[in-house]
Image (cartoon, rainbow, N blue to C red):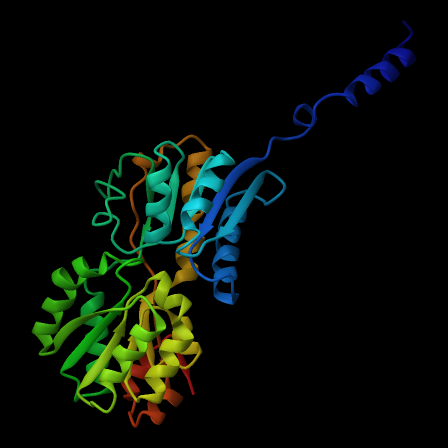
Amino acid sequence: MRRREFIALLGGTAATWPLGARAQRLRRIGVLMGIPNDTEGQARIKAFQDGLYQLGWKANSNVEIDVRWATPDSVMSLARELISLQPEAILAVNTFVATALSQETKTVPIVFAAVFDPLDAKLVTDFAKPGGNVTGLTTHEPTMGGKWLQLLRELNHQVNRAVLLFNENTAPFTKHFYSRYFEPAGRSVGVQTALAAATSIADIERTITELAGKQDAALVVMADPFTTENRKSIVELAASHRVTAVYPWPYFVRIGGLISYGPDPIDIFRRAASYPDRILKGAKPGDLPVEMPTKFELKINVKTAKALGLEVPWQLQQLADEVIE
């Protein structure tokens, strides 16, 4: 056979080869979000994708990223759907989502990006060597409860009672956090503490209404999917009832909340990309240590403080990462 005929035959044969034989195989990562698909949610996804890109993973080039947005009602079905796609790792946005995934699979690697207490949630057995198929980044820092109470006292010296608002279905870890950290922190600074469970807007309204007009009482909002989804209602109710409140995430302050202190969620999601990167390169999730938050943000809304009749100390404004006038 002449050379020209052989090359033509080879070219025709190659056209019939499977795509996978001619192109690089796409790796697959699943993402299960348990917060609203809004500006904040999209910003976290982008941070995760940016983190992957910096590590050499480009969406639709060498990795496919399947994102699902879950509600409390759909989280189990979407967890099963993602697992059925056979991803090599799944990113879970929080405790509620990570727990749902871990109940559905003990083999697919699960990386959590914002779990408050993975030990209490029984997602891992040890921070240094998690074991099993779950690991990731925690948002918990033992002194956080004390920081929230300290900030409340700095803004409003009359505060001697604080209510911790949470959803016992989406944030069951709160009771452990309360008994181990928040209540002792309250005793140390002379603040009486209490839990306020809420599973509906009506529960939120009842809790905040009970604090209305009480200058010595304040609200602490726990980080969980329920409070995140209902952040607009919480902020508006706190404003209308003139309640001093501290929040876990900066986006509460950007929509009118008084003050927030907690880990930077964008930094957490960017750092989370290092886990699937190592897993796709052969690491076992059980051998990858759980990491603590390293970047915290303090945000203050001075306009809201003025509306509440509070004066934000200049020293506190100097410490803030962002001051909204």
